[in-house]
Image (cartoon, rainbow, N blue to C red; front, side, top):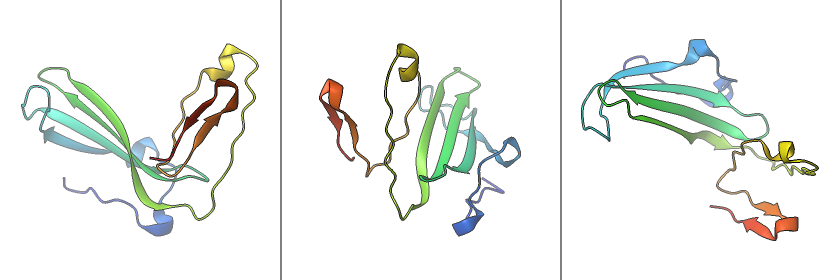
Length: 115
């Protein structure tokens, strides 16, 4: 893991391809080999918090895994986002929810609590 260090404080920025860290010869959880490569990108999502985007790919068994973990601190002020769905295309999106956020969809009587 040489050269891998996470940003500190205000050094967190929107990630770019030049900031991707490559970690060769990682353990593969699928085949238990040591030929997987992990790519990591620290990035900052405005009005949210710092994230570390990771992707692992094994050269031996072609296993792939991607995940997002939190880095740094939670932003001091929360934000409320509202979306009015008028077509199926409005639902074609991904949502990154912090572990302290609540997702509420009143029309479906659906509430996803923090955690």
